[in-house]
Image (cartoon, rainbow, N blue to C red):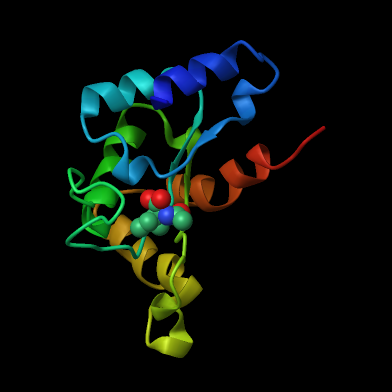
Length: 143
Ligand SMILES: CC[C@H](C)[C@H](NC(C)=O)C(=O)O
C-alpha cells in the first residue's frame, strides 16, 4: 500500500495519526515533491536505515539504496521545509555483520558518525536534539 494511502487510512483513526510513523522512508519515497506531500499528512518521518549502504537492495531491484550522505541531505531539506519536529532516525541493524562484534559500525554509528556529519552539513544541534530526543519522546509518550 502506498505510504500516502496508509496515512490517509490512519487519518480516519484521528487519534492515531499524530502517533503514526512511516518507517524506511529512505528506500521508499525519493521524489522531493512526493515526500513533502506525504510529510504534509502529519506522520512521523522515519529514516531508519543509517549504516545500510547497499549496491543492490534485495527486496526491490528498482530501488537504489541511498547512502548516509544522501539521507543527511534529505533530512536537511525536510528541516528547511519545517518538518524537524516529525523526523526520527535509527540504524535498523538487521544483519550481524553490522554489529561491532563482527566488525560493523554497531549501535553507536549515528552518535559517533552521523551526528558529526549532520553538523558539518549545516544541521543545528537544536534540530539534532529534536530528532534524537524530543521527537521520539513525544512519539512514544502515550497518555
Ligand atoms: C535492507 C533491508 C531493510 C533493513 C529493511 N528490512 C527490514 C527487516 O527492516 C527493508 O527495507 O525491508
